[in-house]
Image 1 (cartoon, rainbow, N blue to C red):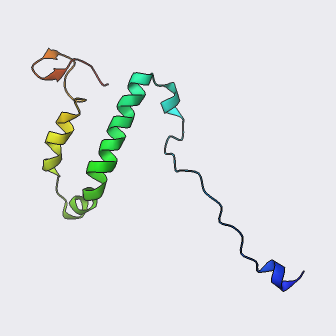
Image 2 (image 1 turned 60 degrees about the vertical axis):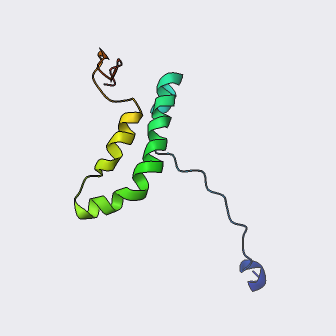
Image 3 (image 1 turned 180 degrees about the vertical axis):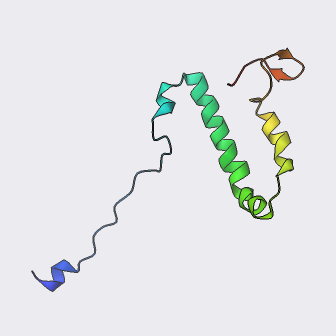
Length: 90
């Protein structure tokens, strides 16, 4: 084996994007439910991820996120009216 050939740099291999759906549950969801899943994921990545470590270290809760979470319209009782989304999420 020639030293010059064994030391050649290999082109970097592009790794696949990380996917935390190990059991492929998203494939079992309806298009509507999958859209909801992606909506929540985007919220977590954009609003929560950038600030949550500091709150964790200080043992505090990011109350300023609550109005933004409420604006998603995904939480509440399955009753129609009174500001509820009329859809059970459990």
